[in-house]
Length: 388
Ligand code: NZQ
Ligand code: ZN
Image 1 (cartoon, rainbow, N blue to C red):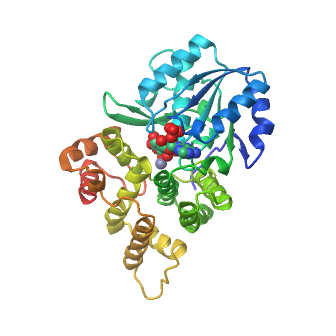
Image 2: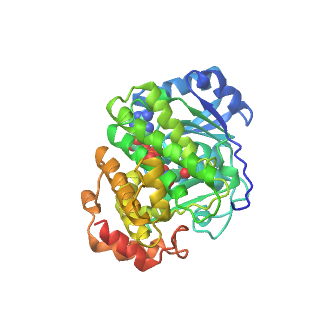
């Protein structure tokens, strides 16, 4: 294992009734004026907005609102939020939505306390020294943003999508009630599953020696996602399945299963370049890339893919070479993606070869990507070409 320090300060409230009981009490720890941040209006349609407003009123919490955070949230919206927080003297940002709203809140929170352009933090030209407190009410199981400090912002003008964060951007509290995910549309449910699964794969493929418990923890999350995926797709109001999937998404990216290991993360780096240009759903891009990345990397390093085949997909290793097992495991990965009817090729999003070179170039803008197997620009290009 690598030496590590682990601290996750988010107070996590899971399950029914928690919001009514604890929202106001949590907000009051930080002040009495919030920025209520949300997306394109789904929270109004399924009633959560009214519930939150009611609780704020009852608790004498003042609020100002910023609506319209885009899926793949944009820097322009971040700027609006920073201005609003500054002029209104907001004490806490209450983000109600999916990963995009939560990520936007994190960027605004850093921007409010940053003397300069917040995007510099995402471009790795600066680091955040402080942030406004954030609280979240999650409505979509996918990113794990409810219990981690990271966030991803798109600069639509420069066609860049960059991740960033700081120790100050862990949400102070997050409310996760699976009922708030009942109305997530079928396609977004599927993309969410692909994203949480991708986070598990990013951790699973690491170069660190001696991490047997981490391996088993990650395998458990992967198996639980696969077991419950069909249920949440077919029965969107199945509370037990939604709750299990939501818990998987939180666990996949809150640091609990990945202590002491260094995950790969090449697929996320590549996907962000695709959605920066084509604005496609993050989970859809990942589902397309992973099998091709696996084909490419397993040629040289089949060992962990063989682990995946045996320990996740239950393939009998008797009489099979590591490479054979790896290939069978990767076929199972493909089979799962096919079974949940997620796009298989870039062409499914009308993406052709026109920007592959640029995406490959941009993927490695900070240097080679990937920890299990390092990828240079040419490697990325080959993977993208295979995914066309
Ligand atoms: O905007 P509204 O109207 O709320 O609609 C949203 C949006 O259209 C809708 N939705 C959310 N909850 C709903 C709902 N519709 C009905 N009922 C509900 N309960 O779903 C659509 C997608 O929402 P979005 O927040 O964009 O999805 P997701 O949670 O998948 O977040 C994606 C973003 O997170 C980033 C991605 O790159 C992408 O920008 N990521 C963030 C990470 C992190 N912070 O740790 C890690 C991830 O790897 C990822 O990169
Ligand atoms: Zn992701």
